[in-house]
Image (cartoon, rainbow, N blue to C red; front, side):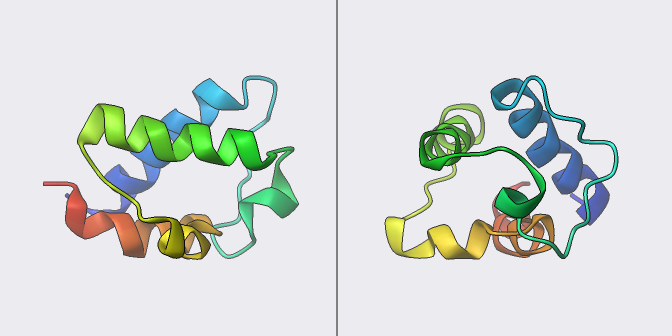
Length: 81
């Protein structure tokens, strides 16, 4: 799966959790928490959705690897087949 498709899957999950957020101008290199009103529970919801939808397990120690859209794509990309 290409980076664009992985990016869209991540944005789709965020869109369901951060319903009122405008996701059209996200900068892939800026931390998601700096761009969106996401708290720690929202972040955990994203991780749980990855597990539920795509069977992707993200260990707690890897949470910092999901800080930006770019880092999410790099970390999660190989898991999407």
